[in-house]
Length: 542
Image 1: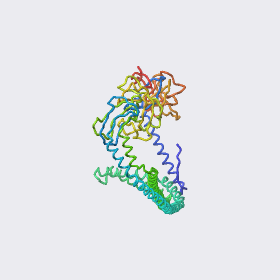
Image 2: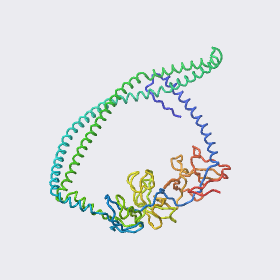
Image 3: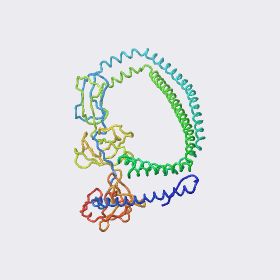
Image 4: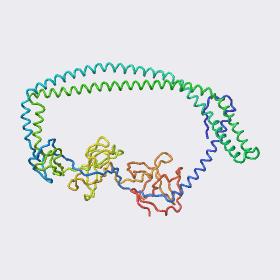
C-alpha cells in the first residue's frame, strides 16, 4: 500500500520516519478488518440468494405510459345567463330539448328599460359637455404623470450609481486580501493534517486513561493491585502521547501557522462582510429604482386609460355610455343559446324573476376526460398523444387523444378530479356515443412503445465491475453470473435490455442487490427448488 504524507519541510528526519511507521501499521490493521467483513457479507448473500425471486427472459411489447383518472365532461358547455332582475314573460324550451346556437331560450319584461331609454335621450345635451370636460382633465393628468416619471428617474439613477460604486470598491478590497488568506489557509491545512495523527493518539490515550481510572475506582481505589497499575500505565501513556503531540506542533510550527491563518481569516471575513453589505445595498437600490419607476408607469397607464375612455365617449357624441348600456340591456331581455346542444338544466318559469344562470347547454357530440397529469410526468406528455380509456359506465376500451394541457400546475379548466396537484389536462374521446357525461374513467397515456424486446424488472440491472450495466443469469448448477447489457426504454416497473448473449428462457435474478458486493457468482445448492415469482417481464419458474 502506498502511503502519501502531506507536510511542510521536516525539521528532523527521525520525526518523519516515526510518522511513516505509524501510518503503515494503521493501514495493515484496516486491511485485515476489511477481509473479515467481506467474508461475513458473502455468507449473508448466499443465504439471501437461496430464496431469491427470478424471472424468465422473453421478448414482448414494452410501453412507456402515464396512468391518470378523471371525470367525463362535455368539451363544449355554455350557460345562458343574465345580469338583469326581470320577470320572465316567455319560455321556449324545457330540460332535454336540443337547441341550436342563436335559438331564443326565454324573453324578459322590458317595460322599465324602454322608459329609461326615453329619459336618457333628453339628457344628451348636458352629457356631451360633461364628456368634453372629462377628456380635458384626463389629458392634463397624463402630462403631469410623465413629468413626474422623468424627475423620479433622474433621482433613482443617482442613488443606484452611488451604490454600484460602493459595491465595486468593497469587491476590490476583498480581492486585495484574498491571496494572503488563501496562502495562510493552505499552510494551516497542511499543518493540521501533519499533526492530526498525533492528536488522534492523544485522544485515544485519554479515553484509555479514563477507562483505567474508572476501573481502578470501581476496584476500591487503593494504591495496590492490578487496577492501580493499569491506571498508572495509562496515565504514563497519555503523558507520552501529549509530549509527542507538542513535539509535532513544534516541528510543524503549529502556533505560527495558526496565528497567521487566524489573522488572514479575520481580514478576509471583514472584507467579505463589507462586500456583501455593499452588494445588498446595491441590489436594494436597484430594486427601489425599479419599484419607483414601475409605480410611475402605473400612474401614467391609469391616466392614459382614462384619457382613451374619455376620447372614446367624446367621439360618440350623443351616444352616451349610459344610453348604450340601456340599449344593451334591452337586447339582453331576449336570452339566446350561445352554442348548440342539449338543455341539461333550467332554473326559471314564466312569471318568475330571474338573475344569473338561466339554463345550461352541453354538447353531447364532443366529450373529454378531464384529468390531472402528475408533475413528474408533465415533461413527457404532449398534446396529440394517444390514450386508452376505460370506465365502468362503458363497455370495452375507448380511444382518446390528449387535446389540452394546462401550462401551470394546479390551475386550468377541467380539474374535476378534485385534486389541485399536477397539471390539468383534457383527453378528447373519439367515440362519445359510447360513454356518458359525469362518468368516472381511467386513461393510459402512451408516451412511447416498443415491440419484440427483452425487458427485466428495474432492480434486476446493476453496475458491473467495469462500470457497464449487468444482469445476473443462472448458469449450470444454479450459480448466478453477470451478463453485460445495454439498457433502453423503461417504465415504472421494467427496463429494456439488449446484449449479444441474451436468449429466450434465460433465468434472471429479479433483484441484483442480493448479489455479493464483489460481483462473483454464488452456487445456489438446493435454491433451484425454492421457486420464483412472476413479473410483467417474465414467467413463473416451475
